[in-house]
Image (cartoon, rainbow over the protein chains, first blue to last red):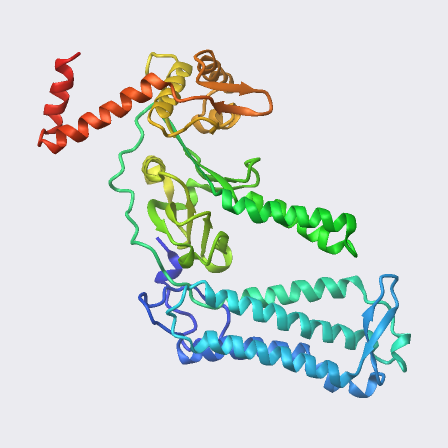
Length: 354
Length: 115
């Protein structure tokens, strides 16, 4: 069923960032990374960070001015500077933080919420990646100028590269960690009776958590007030969309029908996430504990962590096992008929599924 | 809320849908203030014509079970009190009969006696 699980590990020494997704680690509490993989998880991103951050500073220090343009005004030219030594210290400090975080992830016995490890990995790599990429950009802009005031404007594509590069590095780092299987064993679809000829069915479940509307309203109000009276607009421009975004996760509607499962978020039932039947292996009902899934809201990522959940409260939820080995859960009231219907649909699609 | 229809059943599909919504309301799956899926969404899920679902919702509106407003969707108004009451009594009957060791078929016989 899961093609990648049966393949021999192409990289038994664990010295590459690539594989690891789809490989099932030993289940149960307290497993840990092999020495080779642990080393790779720390060393490879660190090498990338050193190559991007401190290395160009040291290599080209003779071609840089005494002070470096390091801050740009909105109109284009540089309006702030720092010493090359200061920038070097900043990059080294960021790398030290990253190494500490990655090291903790690498040597930790995995007894905590499995979400913690990819999240820590992602966060420290985004942070250090941004600092080092900014340093590289500063070096490039200041190169061969006698004075920092002569440096040109910061090209927009530097900013794009900074953000996308650090996100890619962080995602690769988080992906390199093996995922932890949790939850009950698949119940399978064998027991379900398929829908009869001419039978059509749909199940709709909803769940609203009014408490989750509180931060949403609070954020929006603070944002709006700030827009009117506060200094600068950025706080308001950030808080209002954030408030609207949290309202989207205060209520969900889950639909199961012949096409699969659909989750519609928010009072407008938009956006929507769809899981077509072809992607689904089986459905069951689980008790969702926010601590197991990393909190409330949309937790995790199917693509990056092979696990995701929409958590609005503690309690029953509809749980999917997907054909690629990942899993998805959504909290919803009385999910049993939904899981049953989905399994019946899966049986009906049956033999032609592969 | 589970809505199940059978296209081979001679009963009109809109009547089947309406009956299923009534059952869901009576069973407490949906309550006053709850929004039902839009006619478009439900029709797509069941692979039937949107007007069939509209017809079902119109019938439920005539019965005073739901409120259909353009742009506001379909809202459940009230649990039909009689039906919900009967449902509760049936649940109580089953619980009481089980407590006294009656089997499922004995409970059904008991109900049949009073029909």
